[in-house]
Image (cartoon, helix red, strand yellow):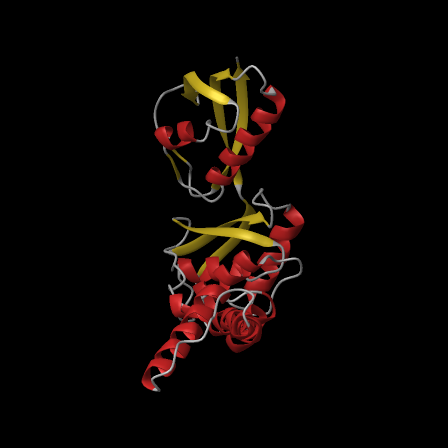
Length: 271
């Protein structure tokens, strides 16, 4: 899904120094109009002591105004403001659901209409169930229109059978009569990475392996296409000088994760 960058609003991000300088400039212009000598406005002068605290207050108010302005828009809302957007769409936050995950569900809902049992509808309905992190619906050929929905839990791992049954029950009311519907835990697609690292003398290999694994897992989450070159760029954490002999599932090629699966990482590092 495409992301929307927050708008640049420089006029609402002035520092106290910038605001005070504008105040000092106005003092000078006013004095010139009156034919008077511009007042001293440097630090330590009486005008500085009087006006600079006002500039600080204005700077803080600008930041609050910008924050409040952006909270009115779903792509940038967070916390209780995001919950308010959920009230509007009729989608409450699931227990323990992060702002990012909740925002994605709300955006999905905002960008789509309630459908008639299409594949995308089942995916959205499943993701709205508490505890579900991701859902992929696959049309099958068992009948004229059969749907298998593969789900992950909130951590991105294959769901338990219990969660799958819960989702199946909740989706039953939405199921169309001609659909055969199954809700299944997502399958595991093993991703094996082997690499030889050149480390700085002061580097801790265990810590480096942990950092690389964390970066690769973040990259793999929810991804259907694993690009060989992009994985290689993730090896350069602090302490890594170079790498060699890198393979992805034993090859030097891209991988495609099946639609019904989630990637599971096995990392082997040598030095």
